[in-house]
Image 1 (cartoon, rainbow, N blue to C red):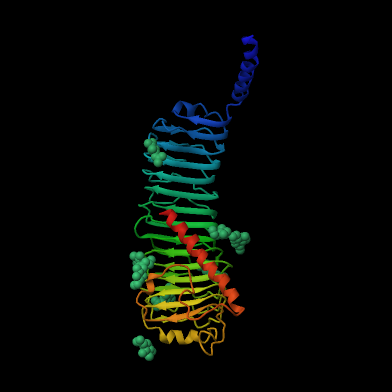
Image 2: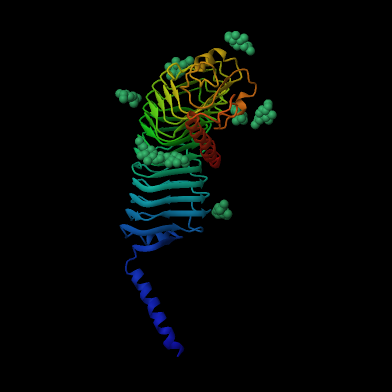
Length: 409
Ligand SMILES: *[C@@H]1O[C@H](CO)[C@@H](O)[C@H](O)[C@H]1NC(C)=O
Ligand SMILES: *[C@@H]1O[C@H](CO)[C@@H](O)[C@H](O)[C@H]1NC(C)=O
Ligand SMILES: *[C@@H]1O[C@H](CO)[C@@H](O)[C@H](O)[C@H]1NC(C)=O
Ligand SMILES: *[C@@H]1O[C@H](CO)[C@@H](O)[C@H](O)[C@H]1NC(C)=O
Ligand SMILES: *[C@@H]1O[C@H](CO)[C@@H](O)[C@H](O)[C@H]1NC(C)=O
Ligand SMILES: *[C@@H]1O[C@H](CO)[C@@H](O)[C@H](O)[C@H]1NC(C)=O
Ligand SMILES: *[C@@H]1O[C@H](CO)[C@@H](O)[C@H](O)[C@H]1NC(C)=O
Ligand SMILES: *[C@@H]1O[C@H](CO)[C@@H](O)[C@H](O)[C@H]1NC(C)=O
């Protein structure tokens, strides 16, 4: 009785095993703990399935043989692996994930040119990327908490996401990227990190902090929110930027060495502009062609001059407060204020209007919120409806982009 009942189960199990082993190059998961496990796969030209290196692996794993992993290559919570290499691997279609691989110091994948994504976090001893041919294709690259001092080998021209944070030896990053379609985060890397994107033409969302220079000579389009927070750069210049797209917030916050924000070609900002707590910025006078801002303008600082001579249309609030006397600068904007804020104003600024100097704690407000210190009631008047919408836009920036920034710390 018992035997009869068990038999079909045993047969089924045996059938399952032999079906799997009939193609040893195709499995749900290839578990690798030893060099013998890796060598056993060297005859496969493609590994179909996820390759997972276990927590207690040998010190060295050489995955030479396969040219392609049609799946992920993963190693997590491993305190044993010192060297991971493959002289043959050219492509990983899924994620190349290294997470909390604490003593891995040598990674060598000389032929790797294409991965779905790179996600390396807490690979504390890793010093080199080890992509000698150069990685020319990846949708996203996240490298955090490593000893990497160079990103040479990251050679894509386009990528959706790039997040480089807490790599304390990284002091220069020279990239040939031409477009970033989703997100760029650079933050808390080596002191004085110099970033050069000499060919970058378009970016979407971007948060940059802890850099001492950020060169974007070709940047022409911003399609998302860009925040420059707590950098050491003395000047920022985007000579080829003409406009930001709808909903973009461009912000410069707490960059304490910044003396010059130069946007010579910008004519239109499709969202807002926030400049706050840049305690060396005495003049905001290098945005000469800016004519139209769909959202809010909010400036807080120690500046004595604000000059935007072409400005003629602000859909949201105009909220400018300085520790210094800005009476002369304010006079030029008063003309654009709604009449209920400034008698005789033409209302080309449609939201709340504030322009005030000699306010001691001006730098104390770096939030994206505007209009709080507005001098009049704005409960009526149809133009304010537009103002209210865009005020929310800038508020959303404060929560979303700054929130994203702190998450990365
Ligand atoms: C990181 O991996 C080590 C083993 O190498 C483990 O002891 C530790 O708990 C892991 N840390 C986390 C946060 O998972
Ligand atoms: C930028 O971020 C915002 C808020 O997270 C998001 O709604 C938007 O889709 C992003 N833009 C791009 C191009 O990824
Ligand atoms: C800036 O834009 C102009 C006009 O589109 C172009 O000719 C020039 O090459 C760009 N400069 C850089 C550094 O990309
Ligand atoms: C801007 O980003 C949005 C997603 O947030 C996308 O739908 C749109 O196509 C992008 N526009 C450009 C010009 O890249
Ligand atoms: C600001 O930077 C731009 C571009 O680098 C430069 O042309 C301009 O002279 C600078 N202005 C000041 C006041 O330093
Ligand atoms: C601010 O500057 C203006 C113009 O130079 C001057 O008339 C005014 O008295 C100054 N205000 C204060 C409080 O110093
Ligand atoms: C901002 O300034 C006010 C008045 O000087 C002070 O009471 C408050 O604590 C300050 N807030 C911050 C966050 O520094
Ligand atoms: C202003 O910037 C300084 C650094 O320059 C920073 O310590 C301070 O916290 C910032 N203030 C606010 C309100 O963010």
